[in-house]
Image (cartoon, rainbow, N blue to C red):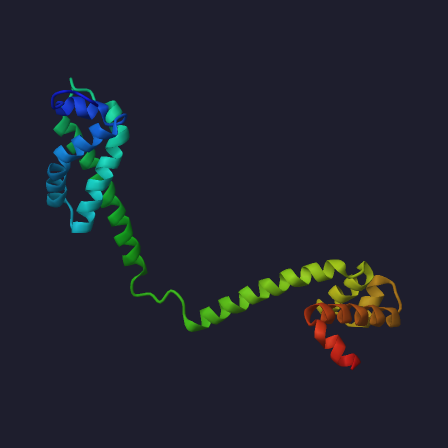
Length: 192
């Protein structure tokens, strides 16, 4: 905005969304007024500073709706400020309600932390095992799953329609593959 004379507040406000110089001039003219308005209505200095900052950020888009026939620039800006203050108060009320709801409660006991660590480890191990299990031949997988599910090798053999010896051999091979994957050095130790 390059006018040879000082622009009116209405002209600056209309140019705010499009002209950085107009925004800066308008900001300089209104920042103290907005700050004073916010200080009287906010419960902390931080909230008042946030309200001022959010007011001018919001003003960048809200200024497009400014109609000088409906309101003075100061009324329009303070209307935006009122909305920002309401938003801040609602956010603070939600925060206080949440803090109140949670206060006095221990969210996690030390046993809970141990359980969470164990669950994380179990998920990690399960991911590793699912990849290993997929690489084990299907016959060995079935025997391993049945035995892991609580059946004896003989019961697993009956269910799969194979001999007891075949079930034991498959189970042994499956366990060996799992051990090799989970601890590749253990196989070398057994062979040494």
